[in-house]
Length: 453
Image (tube, rainbow, N blue to C red):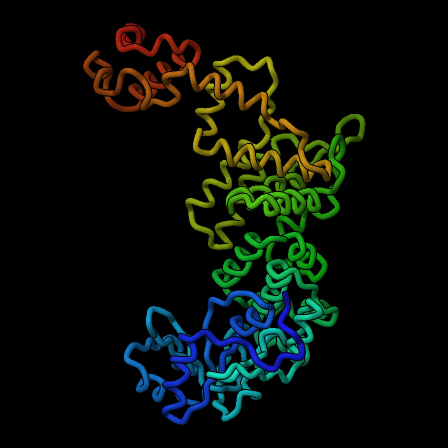
């Protein structure tokens, strides 16, 4: 429920009133600003507590016992008060953004209106006096919140020239809040792509990750496509636009991928699955060939997609563990189970995929299915395969080298030297057990191993 446009105040939590009283005692102004005000206006719970003040950083540091100098150059310190962190910034205006992200020049000012004028979007340019919570809204932020629209403060081209990350922030807010994007804002993004190009990949990672983990990443991804951000940030995905597919596919590769990611988000799937859903087919443009009937084919596209995804996620500064898991899912997403699979084939599948990745892989296939046809997978999707897996698990005593009834020391005692040959023998024993689980006893495996000696 939205905060009433007629209301002139927002409720200020007691702990914020307490810290505001410290400013009052020193004769200083204090305003609650940023996301907390936006969320409280929307009738939502707030979590980030940012304060704007006419006090300089040295004065703020003298008021409180625990203060971190997190941005002295830009007039910002972090006050630690009763277990919470408050980012406190002196009223300021800014100029000269040579790196496309941070101002080279900061001018401290005496009033909140000047400070609000430097902010990105009208919904983020509302302040609340402390401790009372009276709203200061010079740019119509409350009205835009009520209309569920994201609009820049002032001229969009100027805002995006100052900070190249703001276009991605706008798209992220659209995906997370369910707001629409003002047309002048969208038009301005394309004219300032060169500024976004100067932003570090670490900062782009932060915004992209929030987009992927939002309730509706498709909104942001579609806007990235129309504004040119996609080609600048994710050229591998942009190459999938208008790459047609045949057979069961109803959409081009780009639309298919975005729909798969949207399905994963709608079903609250993990970050790993969402990333795999978005990028699982980005190798298709490189693998596209027409067969004798003129139909497009994409043989081995999962390998090329995995290779491209690893390169892309490294560029976006994702952690190695996340990258490895996403790439693994993409490499394995093209499995084609049918009832003819033997128990040994299922066991080999489980070893190759890894039981710890099975639920994520099945989730990816469900998202892939949705992106193919545009509707949810049928009831019982992959149920027969899951039943076969459960049956095999119940009867199998070894699905990894660690589960074998013998180990490397046992084989060395037989005369098999440590090293590559020992590893080959262990894998041969595992293959034997996969074919016949009854062989997984110490006596039988040692008997097989003696043949290698």
